[in-house]
Length: 302
Image (cartoon, rainbow, N blue to C red; front, side, top):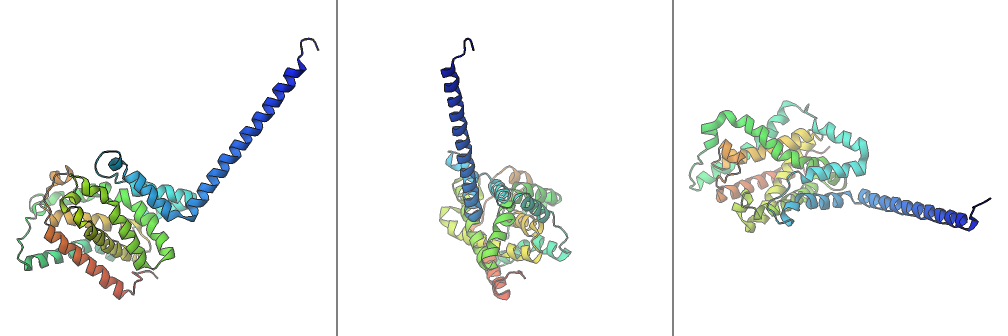
């Protein structure tokens, strides 16, 4: 054939075949790497979840800023569930997040038990000679309490609970007794707040880094009580997670501080009575211990 260069043709063909083999090898290598990574995540999902939570949540802190990204646990929880359990896992997560038919009793427990424990701590504080708190929010802006409850729900529990009780608690309870699962969750939950102790805008800063161990104990106690409600409501993330968590935050602000609606939302410091807070931690921890004893550590798990 005139003008046909056989050497060039075969050289080009060899290069193309070689390139195809390299591309195929690269694709196989990448696919194999992804499978290895996915298998590791599925083998150690709790470790992956905790590491991913810290990477996402603490980014503002180690990037030179202040505080934490509060939606880190929920984002990490959803990602982990998607990788480990796929579409079915995500559907189950949504089902538990919308599980509201748990009986009026458990709605009241989730909403009012944190208030009751806070009032018990208040009573002890008064017996020790403390001054009655101003209850500014309740006295002056009581009509805004429902609005404040809904707003804090978005800013707190929604950012955390898809991770803590959406993913971590069920996984821990598959391996450990409920009391131990609560202890491990509470320990992780408490230490997750570490950057907040360096953030002047956070109430944790007022407590001081020296009280971090006591704060972790408080979170372990709270996690134990929440596990009980979670199990008693057959895994309702809505009631045992979002509502209880938010009620604890809500009553803490309303009863423990001199906050107002605008001040609380604006991040203004309302002042923390450290003695009152410490007594509140002790009361919550004792309530958790009594509950563990009464349920023999099962915390409502059947």
